[in-house]
Length: 301
Figure 1 (cartoon, rainbow, N blue to C red):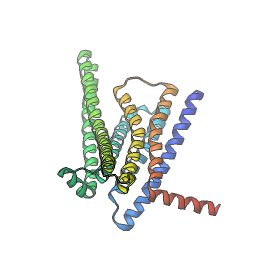
Figure 2 (figure 1 turned 90 degrees about the vertical axis):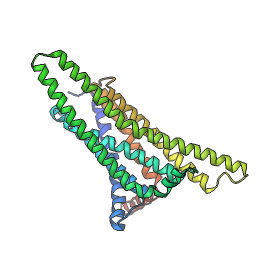
Figure 3 (figure 1 turned 90 degrees about the horizontal axis):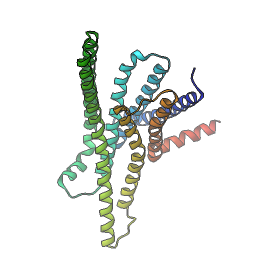
Figure 4 (figure 1 turned 135 degrees about the vertical axis):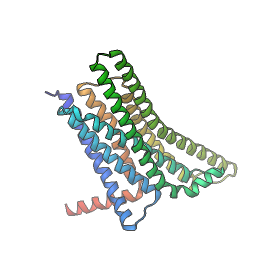
């Protein structure tokens, strides 16, 4: 019988997950219709649509996985852990590409490589999205195959009574899993941080030039820098706790039981829900469609 705190955290988790799925479904629907109607989509909106679809799937997998755990279907958890790992890793990469896109489009540097990126980034976005999908897919599939082989070896050696060898294989499995997960999660997180730092450096240098030439510090370029930086700061506020929560789970620092497990789930997925809300409200296109639909709903009411 579940305790009252457990039920409360369960209800909060499912409500915030459903709210996030509604928000992300809204973004996918709006941008997907425009993509189908015009047969093209701006590079930034393309990343946002892919990120929203990934968030939608991530919350769906989390709800399904937690329902299976709650009702005692632990034997299928490994399959859903693989799916969760795929969607989660893809989400981190898409978030990193959105930060890189903002940085390249807004920041100003005189390096030839940066000029080349600024000129080519819109054409590179579809390849980056497809490349991330393929890379994450191959990595997760290979990791699942290695994990399955190692688990069979552990079970075989344990049944033969060779506990020492089984412990060594299990230790190797944990090290391999931790290295694989941290590599695939740390690289996009570092890309995100580097993009943000470059944008801060570009803004500081731009403000210094404005002071030297005694120009208006609120010129259009400064406003664009500031808006992009504010968006990335909000992304960082929601992105960092989620990344750190994943690291805690991967390292297995602690094992949550009862209501504390559901409390951890609430905290982990709350950042994605707030991230989705910020993305909807910060996009003029999505905000306009949302307000139009709200006014129509109020008129009908």
